[in-house]
Length: 199
Image 1 (cartoon, one colour):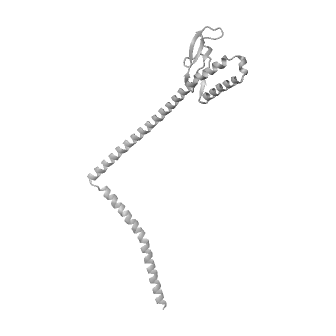
Image 2 (spheres, helix red, strand yellow):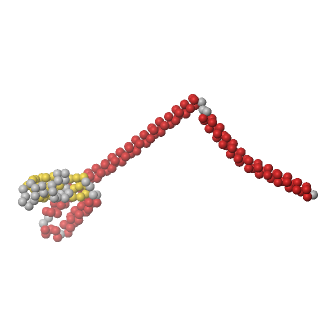
Image 3 (cartoon, helix red, strand yellow):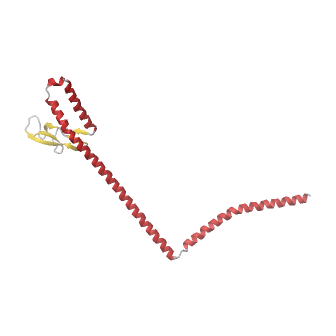
């Protein structure tokens, strides 16, 4: 009886080993069959006929030309976009300058009106109203970046000389008086200041 059981146990162990071996072989066989098919594909690619090689070269050259054309068109589009943005920015700046220039004569008139008023009128309520309007307009222009042109030395790029006069109190080239205030927007002259200059 004991021999029979030993024999059955050995047979069962042998069946288990066989099953394990089959299980172990299957994945490696699958891997080896994949690698074999990849190798076969590589060999077929290497052993292509000359005409197929020429076709592949032609297709590669055509793809390269298409890529270069696409890159060129893309660069042209980017440049076009930059030009449009620059033109729009310039147009906005010019519109802003044109609008500001229309307000400068109003500012001049308010300045003249305030200077010409008699001293006793400055105590009245309507004077403070006009002064408030003048200051509001000045603040609006300042917020837009408008600054008055300073006096001092005559600068033909910023000042317009109305007269050249002899003045014992001023050196040659020095501004005696500003007749009409000039203004700048950033580094751009909106209107040159009209001045009297010592000679």
